[in-house]
Length: 118
Ligand code: 5GP
Image (cartoon, rainbow, N blue to C red; front, side, top):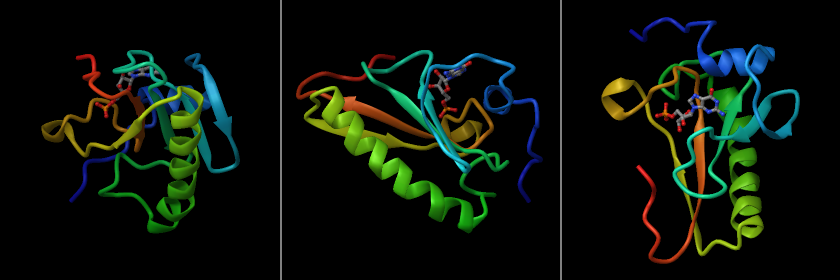
């Protein structure tokens, strides 16, 4: 079974406006904002407003609304930062590298030969 969703996780606080963020896009279902510790210039995060820890416990209907926005924002970020490629990454649970327990997709513009920052 999945661990419970913590309604006071950092991204829940961003959604509630309790923590500031640099917002790029928002609609009824989705928020996109800049990552506070970017692994490359233009690193942004896309989250559903619906509560889920990660992809393992997400409602498939939420994912099906979210993924077209992930695609649009990946295309837009690649264009905006004149990137050669774009990484889309997503981690589930601490063992996989997840540190904030609200579903999120990383969108990271990439340039040829430039490694990610730690
Ligand atoms: P994870 O490792 O869980 O996939 O990634 C969580 C991401 O959230 C990290 O890239 C981290 O820099 C970012 N992050 C953590 N705290 C904050 C915050 O308060 N604001 C923003 N904008 N990003 C955050």
